Length: 167
Image 1 (cartoon, rainbow, N blue to C red):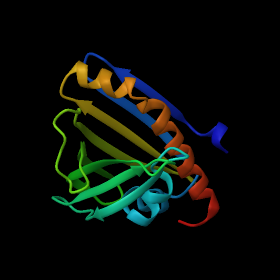
Image 2 (image 1 turned 30 degrees about the vertical axis):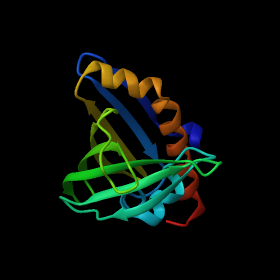
Image 3 (image 1 turned 90 degrees about the horizontal axis):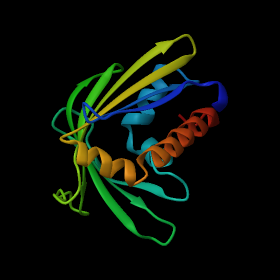
């Protein structure tokens, strides 16, 4: 099914944005759960052979998700997403940052503002993700770090998780 689902990835350099449109062969409630529940996020968020490991998730406005990307040698890269606005089963906004294991933001890396929209059409769910950076340099840094490749792999992991019936 992966080959038949919509996947658009574009970079808008003028507005310092990445836009991803990704379709999933699953109902909205399952896709929403996969994006908002730690036990599900941990199963797909990281590109293989990496794994995501949630330390804290409080999915509510003012809450945050603190997680590590854990590599095959046990190395950990920590990040946090601070939830700014949530409309259940429709959209949410969060500010993402690299941090330490306690959630203290690392100012040496770019922060990003995510806006995720969810819409259902028949048996498919479309997730439209707009990620905005403060400046072009931050956008460029994230692209050079392999964001497109890594995020695409994670989204493919989500396809597999949804197809497995574990959601």
